[in-house]
Amino acid sequence: MSLTPKQFNMLALKTDFLEVRDRLAMIDGRISKIIDSLDGLVSRTYNVECNFAANQSAHDRFEGRL
Image (cartoon, rainbow, N blue to C red; front, side, top):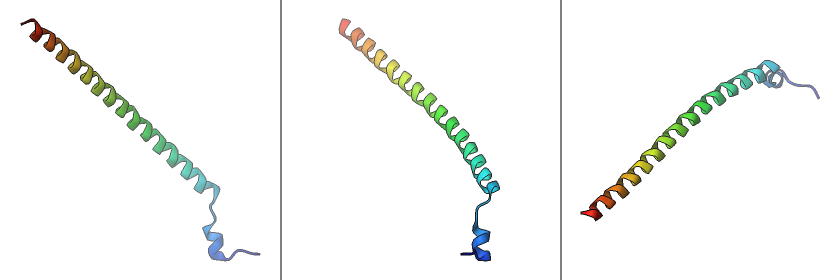
């Protein structure tokens, strides 16, 4: 069974696959940067929450002494 010209033009070439691979690699790099940024934000938020809890407990101890 032979291909029609329209079907032949729709076939993917090796260069098409290479372009897709390069685009996926670029997207992967960007996603890695986004995830690293989110990790930093989560870490900072966790530290702020820990500091808030420590300050609150210190405040409660101080009020208990009065």
